[in-house]
Structure formats: C-alpha cells, structure tokens
Amino acid sequence: MSKKKIIIIGGGAAGFFCAANLDESKFYVTILEQNSDVLQKVKISGGGRCNVSHACFDPKELVQYYPRGNKELVSVFHKFQPGDTMEWFEQRNVPLKIEADQRMFPESNSSQTIIDTLTKEVQEKNFDIVTKSVVLKIEPQENQYLITTNTTTYVADEVVYTTGSSPKSLNLIQEMGHTIVKPVPSLFTFNIKNDTLKDLMGTSFPNAEVSIPKLKMEESGPMLITHWGLSGPAILKISAWKARALAELQYKFEIVVNFLGIDMEDAAELFKSYRSENPKKTIGSSKIFDVTTRFWHRILWLSKIDLEKNISNISGQELEKILIHLCENKMQVSGKSTYKDEFVTAGGVELKEIDFKTMKSKILPNFYLAGEVLNIDAVTGGFNFQACWSEAWLIAQDLNLQQS
Image (cartoon, rainbow, N blue to C red; front, side, top):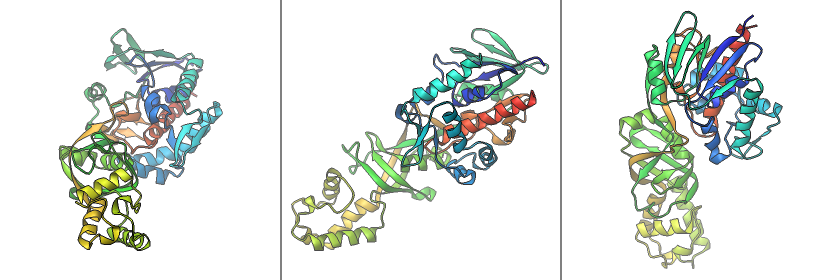
C-alpha cells in the first residue's frame, strides 16, 4: 500500500502530538508552522515549566473544568485522559510530577524537556517540520487538498488543522465552509482602580471569593493584586466561565470581593475572640486575619481607624466598616488585561461540525481539527493542553487504523 501524504497545519501541542503518534511506515507527514519556532505555547506555559496536564482521572469530573466543550470531551477523555498523558511521557523517559494543586509538570521543571521529547519523536519518524510557512489557501481537489503557502505548494491526502485561534486561520476554515463562533478573550485579569488595591502589587490571598452580582456568578480560590487590578485563579476562572457575558458588558461591571473567603459573621467572631484574648493590643499590631500587615493597615486606613487605637476600644460601627472592606468590598472593573503569551480564546469552529469519535470534520472529507481552533477552552491548570493531547491522539489513532 502506498504511503499517504498528511499535512499538519500548525506546529503547536496538538499538531506535534498527532505527528508523534502517527505510524511512519504508513505516512509521509509534513508539519507547517508559520512562526520561526515550533511549540511556542508549550515553551512559555507554567512560567517556562510547562503545565502539561492536571491530575484529574475521571472524564466526567475532568470536563467540569471546560466552560466550552464539556459535553463533547466526555467521549474523548474516555479514550485518552491525564493518566494516559503521564504514561505516554513516562514511556519516553519524561516522568511527570503532580504538585499540591494537582497541576502536572515534568520532573525537570523545564518546558524544554517536553519540546525536546515531541520534536525528537517527530524527527525520528523522518517527518518534515517546516517553519516560517504561512498557509494562504487550502483547495479541495479530487480526494486530495492543494495547500498553498508563502513559499511553495503541497498536495495532501489528509489534512490535520491545529492552527490555534488566530483570526487568519479561522477565516481560512470559514471560507472552506465551517461555521465560526466569534472568538472572545478568556482567562484574563480584571483592571480595577480602587484605593483598596493601590500600591499593593504582589499581595496575595489564598482563599478569596469573587462574585459578579449582575451575572449571578461566584468563584473562589487564590487571588493576587497586580499592577492593573486583580488576578489569580479565582479571577481567571470567573473570566473563563463568563467570557461571552463579560465581552457583552464590554468589561465594565461591578464585582464583590471577599478577601478572607469566610462569612462576615465568622470574621466578626474571629475578631471578637482575638480581642478578648489580646485586650491590650493596638489594632494596627493585631494579627487577626490571614492577610499581610500592609493590607491590614490599608483596610484600617479605609475604615478611618487610627493604627494606634486599642483593640478594646473598637466600636461596633468601626468593626462593621472593617468587615465590609474585608468581606464585601465592592469594586468597579474597567477593563481586562490578557496574558499575551498564554492567550486563550472562547470561540472557534462550531462543535456540531466535528465528529468527536475521530475529530474529523463533518463538512470537509479527510480533514481533521484539534486544539484551540475549536470552540473549546478550559480554566487555567493544564486543561487546555490535555484537550490538545487527547484530541490529537484520537486523530492519530483514526489515521493509523484507516491505513491498516
């Protein structure tokens, strides 16, 4: 049987993982990447350590982390899930470790390990990797595709489209007949100008709660004050789940922040029991809540309470002010900041047009799609990569079986 020609458009996580799992005795494979480097998102993920996946091994539980694509991914994860990802890398002498927050990283703590493993796997199969190759046109021919790039033309028996969510790549696939759900940013930080946060960049809160009353949405988790406003998992999660609604609000809305992550009544009890045990302390030197001294002093300043005031002399009214600033702090969000490098979008190819048993297009013959080009995205923590690995693995299995 003659070897088939496969062109993989996009040299990111999904494209490379698909190639790494293809049978080289059956295919000629060429990966086309428009940038000068492949696997760029893998390189910068997790602060350069590469957050490969997440230690959640039950597909039904795993899909709960995907605001878009959760129904479709159940069957995909039943065939290839984080446990399989661990095994795949371990078989290639790249053990993954699970951190306390369940995120998975290579034991080397370097994304280069993951990049080297994927590129080595592809090169050992003698597949071609062509960088600085911009796809301009894809034309269906009889049982094949003609792919025109900025430098040359390729003929493909099968196309694997793993371009990410760039507008150009979405336009190209739309021109070929696929429906595109308009992309909007997901996973972004909130820009806030508020005296509570001013000059406190880097201050973090392990168990904050954030709600958007207008959207009846609440999230909890670690939170961080940044130069622009607020970030951290609690903020990023809420931005992912409400990506479309927040775009409609043009990123202007009110949030209510509970820096402590406990009820106001419980906070009041903590305060009172601390006061009865430390009646002689000044309010400024009192360590009552799990917050930094600088932040505590800011709360007292906002509440117009002198730091030298004795804790026993704090009135009920003053305590209420403190607790409102800590547990029910209302702030206006005036915009968003996206991590340019780890940019994730909600939107992409309409999921009804994909067969999730194989990741094949229902619109175009012999055409597969995977990764961020699809209207699938997840919260932060290794989930977006896991979707790429699983979808790409399915494509490779389907192609390998077809040719057997």
